[in-house]
Picture (spheres, one colour):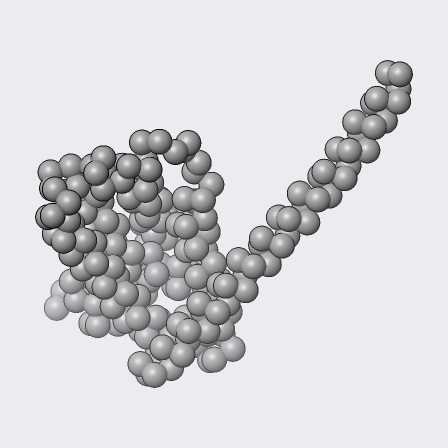
Length: 211
């Protein structure tokens, strides 16, 4: 195996040879944060494509609903950031060897099959009938399963865990993500109430001054 590879070649090596790829990348301290950011951007794009495009028979809501990008950002970028922070936090407590940068890079690389297969699956709906939807669904779930395998393998290599401890770490990470998102919703709700309170005071004062 030749380890003198470009960042793109490292990405390809990880995707098609996840077990040795992640271990090699960790040993050689490879992985590009720039490429990871680009991957997360395309993760957002894939979510937009998946929800707002596709054949009319497969996604009629996309042609009638008002487009709102906030939920899509939440389902992509926010979920990714929450995963990275939660995973790093719990694995630090469980003596994991990975730092936040490594977790971010390894997690982003694992998203590539899902992104590619999700976009392919969506564009296949323009050429398929509903009776043939099994083919687009198969492509989507193959990409999803591939990304799950990469994520598990990546976290194992990142923190140097056994598979048992890796699965425990992933469960704790998901619980942590849920708690973080709940706190975020509560925080946003609090800010909204504070904004409404001060806006009400402002409009009342303005009304008194004008009257």
